[in-house]
Length: 113
Image 1: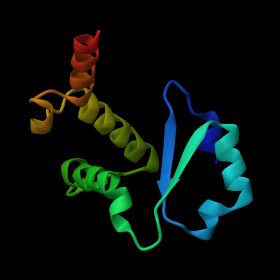
Image 2: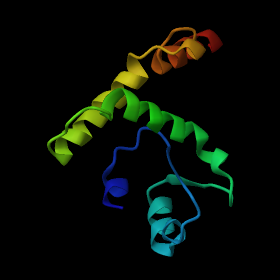
Image 3: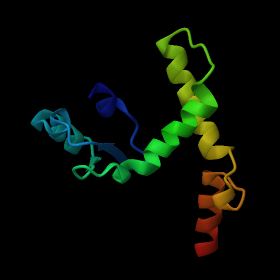
Image 4: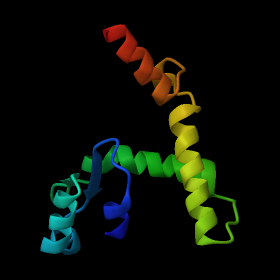
């Protein structure tokens, strides 16, 4: 919960989880609301609700983590932050006309204007 309260808030943050009791706990829900975090919970017995994030974390583990030896928690966090930046700003995606997600969004925004 400390991370939720300390984060910068330039964009809407969404936390997606299953229906575990700890994600429905009153203190957790209040903290999310207080910090403008949107809570998304999977429907019962519907694993496809979170398919896009499961896919992203599968790619992250395959491209960044497997076969690597990380010596500390701090190094792990740093590598994840670097990977997410690279994934959003550099890594091209065939589905996005060979652009990175940020390039695609920028181009789409300019086309709409």
